Length: 279
Ligand code: ADP
Ligand code: MG
Image 1: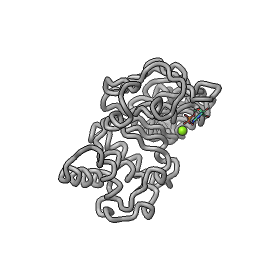
Image 2 (image 1 turned 90 degrees about the vertical axis):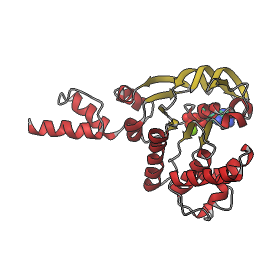
Image 3 (image 1 turned 180 degrees about the vertical axis):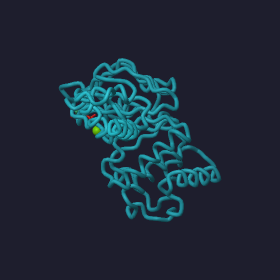
Image 4 (image 1 turned 135 degrees about the vertical axis):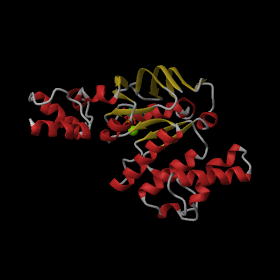
């Protein structure tokens, strides 16, 4: 679905490269988590998937990004946006219509769809994001979680095959965060949408990502299944990445010789602690 080949990028006027020789792939239906400290290049990478980099934001662009076989150097942002939907950190910066319904319709206006299809898609997108019944609501009146789900609804209505979400929950309260993360899981598991998610909530990535890449100063420094990545708890901490509490406790108990495996999900940790208490 996405193929990144030896990608490097330096913003126009910047001294240093923000992305350095990055290569990886994302399979159809896969859920890829992206981790990295602030400034490691996560947002820059997200902007390469729908061609905003290099088409709208310029700089030195080396290597290639392919989306469903299209080279992003050659395809336009408009074409790529039909395949890759991008959701950013702050929902307020992505909402500008008078009603919830118009917000979703707006995204569909340039696709040349007939009225019935537009209605069907609005209904589908609002239903799946749990916003049914709020059609006439003024977007600024929604809660943070609802706003971000509305951004996701307007992106989904275009029927992209990939959803790229750049820290979509960082400005939400715990309830909003939970709503948005469960929606992302549902879209991946039930709708088969390929997900690329930049997210600081590592507990969530541990549970739901198929694979994780870790960026440090523009380079991919780790890539693997969540368990493989979180096994390197000390290294992640050095990079400034928060690790799941269960993994921290698991690593500590392993160090003390009480457990054999280090990286553990909540469930496994509870099981291991129970076994430990019984022994
Ligand atoms: P992250 O999302 O991981 O915090 P970014 O992709 O935003 O990282 O930034 C990566 C690097 O690129 C940082 O050093 C940042 O200062 C730089 N950078 C980001 N945006 C721009 C820009 N528009 N112009 C110049 N440098 C930028
Ligand atoms: Mg960022």
